[in-house]
Amino acid sequence: MADHDQDQKTEQPTGKRLDEAHDRGQFARSSELALMFPVAAVLGVLTMTVQSTSRDLAEYSVSMFSRFAVTQVARDTVTIQLSELLLVAGRTVGPVLLAITGATLFASGIQSGFRLTPNVITFKLEQLDVVANFTRTFSKSAFVRVGIDLLKLGAIGTALWLGTRGLIVDPLFSAPVEVGYLGEFLNRATLLFLTRLLLALGIVAAISYSYERFKTHRDLMMTREEVKEETKQSEGDGRVKGAMRRMARRLMQKQMLSAVKTADVVVTNPTHFAVALKYERGKDKAPVVLAKGENRFAQRIKALAAENGVPMVENKPVARLLFAMGTVGETIPSELYQAVAEILAVVYRTNRYYFHRLKTRRMEQGA
Image (cartoon, rainbow, N blue to C red):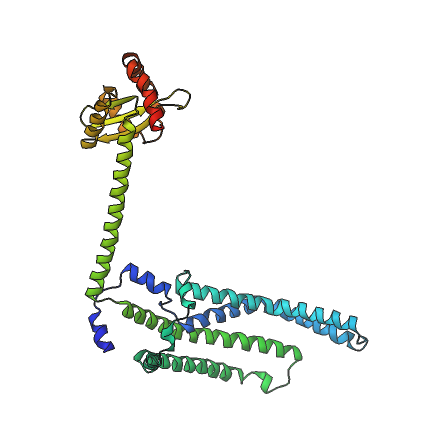
């Protein structure tokens, strides 16, 4: 049944499906890759710090054994010795621990795309489904996983065998050597083993991660019906947003038409544009755009202005610039101060009775 469902999935996963899968923690992850980075970090730290670490350990050992016979065992001396031991251990082990922590976080970040997946830690009832767990245990992916684990075990065993074969012929096992040679041998053996282990893990990690990417991508494939349903939902969201934008536009137009009644003047194109302006001395720093519109809405502004006796002035270039540069509710651009001031001067001179009534109208509407 699962194979039949997989055969139906012929479409590439959409961006929405990929994002949702990532939030659930469904992305390619390889434990071998997560192990390879800490091993590489340890190898790098040991390569850079082995000499200084050996020197610190040697100095501490010489200092401790040289004072051992003359140091009395007391609370103060034990505290001092423990402090020295912790300090040396911190300098020795600290860089390795920091490297392992940083490498582990980096490996996780690479696999997750450095994105948080908080939904991964949530408890799901499906995890208690015995049938589903049994199916996953004996699925094709589980057998592939076993094969990769066997490959990993073989790679590590091979690295150990090759390293051991090269080291058993060392003079340490067949002839007397100096004590200092033992430290050199241990250093060389550790670095050699880690290098071989890193190479083996790199090969296994490449195979494992490639398979996980393939498996995850295959699992996220979609049927044509799922793509159609997601597209329908996206279009539905688009229709809702479009309806909200249209509603907001109608509300704004209604507010603009209501404000036209309190305008000082309406500057027209005369047929394409109409811009209503207001200016109250002592209140406005410059004329304010109350409403603006083009074509049919411009005609509605003009009709409402005529109905309420608002003066209208035909000035094509000024009307065009006011419509293009002006913002409803804000003052006009400074470049138009002079032109609008001349229009208002004419309007104030020829429509005194209108402005006498305008004060009362503004007080009634709270403008």
